[in-house]
Amino acid sequence: MAHIPAVTKAVIPAAGLGTRFLPATKAVPKEMLPIIDTPTIQLVVEEAVAAGLTDVLMITARGKTAIEDHFDRNLDLEEVLTAKGDEAGLASITASNRMAAMHFVRQGKALGLGHAVLCAAEHVGDEPFAVLLGDDFIDARDPLLKRMLEVRQQYGGSIVALMEVDPEQVSAYGVATIKPTDADDVVAVTDLVEKPAVNEAPSNWIVVGRYVCDPAIFDVLRDTPPGRGGEIQLTDALRTLARTDRAYGANRVNGVNGANGAAADGGGVHGVLFRGRRYDTGKKLEYLQTLIQFACERPDVAPEFVPWLRSYLDSLSPAPSR
Ligand code: G1P
Image (cartoon, rainbow, N blue to C red; front, top):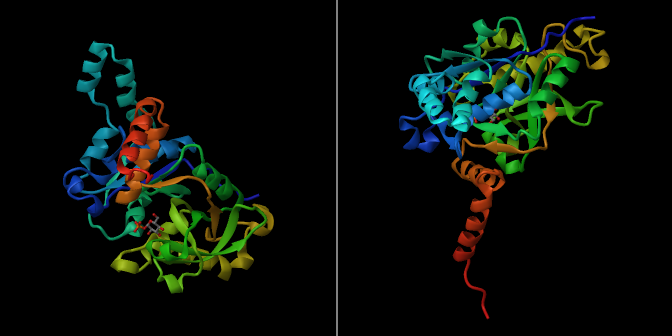
């Protein structure tokens, strides 16, 4: 039986400029914007670690050194907090440097998400790997990545996470053409298109920022020309793999998983249909919504915050007419 290697590495592209959050992101990486007190990038790394991944490679760029500092030790702070006997504070600052083996590589030029992922080729080598985009994160209670890793184990190839959205929202995302499989939450992806016009979208199942990629993606990315926005798109490389699987369907490796087996060339794309909670912190409105939601749910702030929020909202609403 063909051996499908387990996934241990996560690649987190974090090289984007963050223009949606200017001026805050003029000097501070957008990935460091906090949800209450935790940078969004830490929540993304926690997601990778919770799925069992132990090695994290971040693709950063000029101006992103705060991210590296965040995942490094801060001995001055450790000393001060130790002297004060502040154990909770100490635990909060050491958590981020103990989570996983952290590695960083820079994307010299902003040539697109596909190019950012290609920057991981040397570190990743010939192994499947997860990609987690830093602009959104998935609720810890809805373990999407863990499910995607199981699906990769079963089907091989590459796995994308798909969510159903209102048709008018599709043009902000990669969109998939899908076919059902025997599993309720798994589909075969036969085609993908990056940010199509609403009337040209093949479905309203969008690719959210979680992927498990077969290492075959690297060779495909090397041959992928700039696409939407003049950038090298990860979606376009996955499209090639999705289509290759169809073209070479006869070459499927038998024994890996029967009729749904991985393609012999490492191709093939499946989708996990996700119906859980996703927070899109890359957009202003949704970032605010995430903050409020977390504040309402966190035991350390909710007891004071929720009553305050209620009375604040009451103070906004017009007095009921008599
Ligand atoms: C990227 C991908 C897109 C995907 C989206 C998910 O787009 O290119 O296919 O649907 O992330 O958030 P971006 O949001 O970086 O423009």
